[in-house]
Length: 112
Image (cartoon, rainbow, N blue to C red; front, side, top):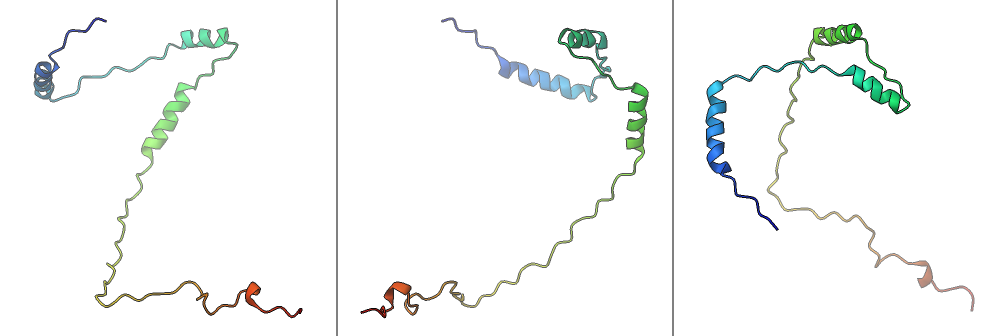
């Protein structure tokens, strides 16, 4: 089993951080062009047909979405805080007291 040589990432990290903070701006990003010809060939070789969106329609929809006004943010109204009582707690019974309840098998049968 061969072991990889340890890397000095601790020494490289501060140098990379100082270079990144020194620039201050993000590098320009170029547009990605989709290789439609290659994708069309892959789809046909699989027995499928490639369907592509019309760029003019996509641009018009994106412009319409950008032109829509942003919804107005209405902050949530906080309800009044609950009043805490310092008095004693009250026990609330939610079941019947079975000591006073006569069950069907406890009744004396009428047959002798």
